Length: 256
Image (cartoon, rainbow, N blue to C red):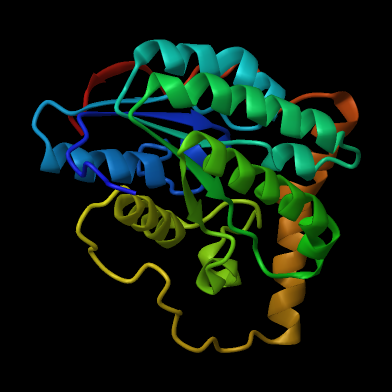
């Protein structure tokens, strides 16, 4: 595929992964791979414009209803779409509906931009992931098929062993650390045809195994701060993104 590598605008569509959790900034906001990517693209192309419509907790149906038409109307050079993973992590999910909605999103977005970017999302290594892995891989098969039909680029984060390393995941075990987001930004940067900055797939140094006591303290902290609230939201039908506006709603010049 012939790449431009001189794109003038980017719109990011999705959920917490694209919003940037858990790449936390000093002011309490999140940065994340999309912001990092936009900054690099802006440094490469004067007048570069950027919008990030992502909101944490969104299911693929909400992304289609709230973000896709908005992104398509902006007609940017590049659109990134990452969605559907939150659906696969629910106790019950209709994967046929997820695939249909993802197809609808791609069919609307692909004609409205020069390059659509899809992703096979990373998965943290661990026993919990094994329960959801078949659903994730079904989603990724759909993504591959849609990309082939619509000329989209697929960034295979799932196939990069280093992004399964637990050290690249925050204490909530759902979101990447700052280093994880940096690697994702590099992966998309390269997929768009820009000169590589480094090897984003490079493994981390060998890990020092934590003691049994340290692991139990970490498990208890995770359960109290993240697992219990997550279960509570599932039981009550609430989302962490309820009432939250898009991160960067307008396609405007990137300045920081």
